[in-house]
Image (cartoon, rainbow, N blue to C red; front, side, top):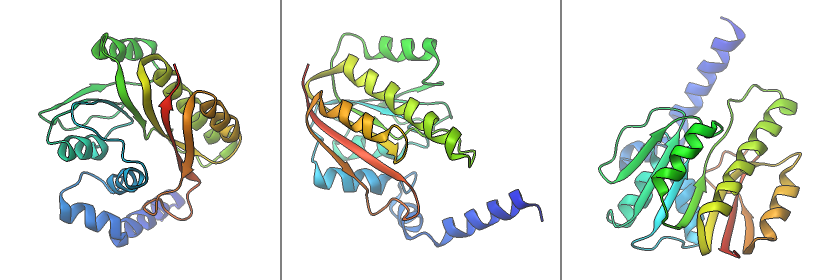
Length: 207
């Protein structure tokens, strides 16, 4: 067996044993990532009826699904991912690469003149295993997400962003603290213990 196929087999075995994967299937969620968002919102209750929410890196759709269901569809959710995502009746989905200027422009056009209450980003690059390559790519996505938040958030809006601890992450957190009234860094229990991922949760955007 090749090294790659052995690694894939091990990943599948971990997935099958993962209690969050099993729970997501039993409860009808699209992925285990829903529990990361749920745990974030338990610390910071950011959802409100009638809000507008952007979901970056949305596929397969668990975060959009959570926001829509928790607010009984009484929210505008715009989701974007480079991968396809099965439709929801009340979620607007754009398939495309967020780093592509044309796709970014399409997202802004879809948002229109309306200001946004919450920008969420669970984006991550395709992992190569080379930290020197993967970390700059992940921080680039985080910085693009923050730039979008600056452009579309209403005053006192909120921003949630996955980052990987490493080169550039401390600078990113400091930049967010200059523009939001409250910023914290949170590692949900649903994040795998060996992962360097954490979530920046920023509230009260200062325009």
